Structures are given as C-alpha cells and as structure tokens.
Image 1 (tube, rainbow, N blue to C red):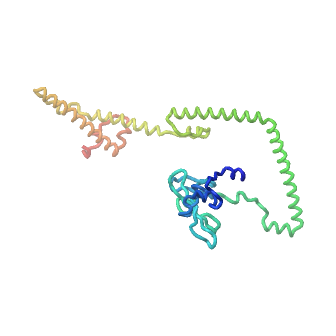
Image 2 (tube, rainbow, N blue to C red):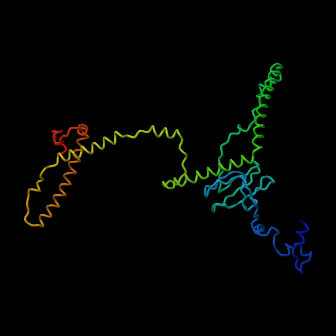
Image 3 (cartoon, one colour):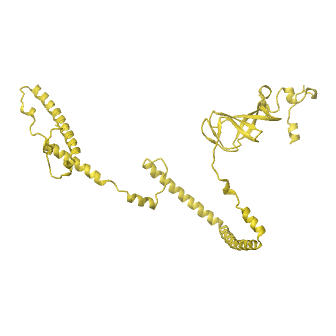
Length: 320
C-alpha cells in the first residue's frame, strides 16, 4: 500500500524537494476539506461516536450508543496538562446542533447543549452471580462437619443437573437431525400467519378501523356476555313518551277560540289560518312543558297505567 500511495501522487515538472512536500507546494492541507478551518479557528472535522444514549432536544428523537457524526473538534480549555476537547455536530433528523465536551477530571463526556441523557431503568443485580455469603464462608472454614455436609449437597445437585443437561443435549440432538423439516415447518407457519394478518387488516379497513386490534380470547367473550344493558331505563323512557303524548291529547281543547271567528275576505282567512297554526304549536309546547314539570313533582303521573288528566292532578294553578 505504501508503494502504491507513493506512485499515485502527481509531481509537477517545476517541483523539487527544496520546495517542501507536494501539499506545501500546492498550498493545501493533507486532510483537505476536513482541515479548512484548522488554521483560522483551530477546528478539525472528525468522526465522532455517541458515547451513550441521548435524546435530541430539537426533534425529541432517541439517539443510541455508537451513532456516528461528522463533528467539529477543537480545544476549549485545559485540565492541568490535558486538553479539554469540544465536539459540535448536527442531528441527522433535524436542524438541531449539539455540543459535547470531554471531562478529564471524571474520565467521562459532558453534554453542553442540544442533548439530554436518556434515562434507562435497569437492575444490576439481575446479572450478578449469587455467591455464598460471608457468614456461610466463615462457617465452611471453621466447621468441618458442615463443610462435609455442604460438599455432599453440592454433589447431589451436580448429579441432578447433570441428568437435566443430558436431557437437553438429547433434545437438541434430535432437533438438529431434522433441521430441514423444522425449517420448512417454520416457514409454512410464517406464511399462514402472514395471510391471516393480511385478511385481518382488510377486515378492519372494511369497518373503518385503521389500527391493529388484539385478537379476542375466551375471557373477552365471557366478559362481553356479562354486560347487561339498561333495558329497563330505555323502556321507562319509551313509556313516558307514550304517556306524555296521551296526556297532551287529553288536555288539548276540542275547539280553539280562533276557530269560532269567521272572516269575510280570503286574505284575512289565510292570515288567520297561519296565526291559528302558530298559536296551536305554542300552546302544545306550553302544555308539554307543564306536564313535564308536574311529572317531576309527582312522578306517579307516568307510573299510573290508567289515563289521567293533568288538570285534575293538582288543584293549584302553579304551573298554569
């Protein structure tokens, strides 16, 4: 590679070794565009790898460990004789810029702006191997009989687990013999499940549902059967409407006052008919409101199956 790199360089006819390297002769840096701000601002473009999981404050997206960016590296200070480096980069999902600096004092990185650490809950004790306690270790060293008993129990556990390991080994050996059939069966099940999922999506789209639903279980069916709709309330409202219409019919006057008057001209007759119809509607709404108010004071008005007249229910003309 060294020979190939040397032979591929172009040296112009007017160059000689006294003029320095070919990059110096051409007036350019050997890192090209990565170092275009190095002489003026001390910035060098490098590849920076995210040290831990973070959240971008611009688009609120997660950025995992190991995501790489083109970062502008520069020295911003010193901790004793160690340089404190700053890395400025742009989010690949939005226009947010974030800055991370090295922390030589704590041998870590420090977020300056544009990011926040992602909080991940985990239990460190899950990955720890449970060893014997200090008391038990001390007892093993001091008590010889307890040590023999402890060793015997270990041997019995070893025998039990050895048989389990043998069974697992035999099971895996049997599975590995028919690996082609197992692979074929797995792919067949995958195709069938894919068809079922496609049919389920089409069925939901036909009903106007654009989200995926969990398949119903027997427990869901049992719970649905236990639901009791308030049928009595619906039936009571229907009966009240029927009885309300009946009371309106009973309280409706047979002949209105306006119908007894006669007019001579056709124009006045047409006007009176319109007034009569509007007055009739207003009187009907008024009677309906009176009946509803009286039913709140005396609910038996709608509970009684026998037809009654609301004018006879109250002697008071409070609602008239």
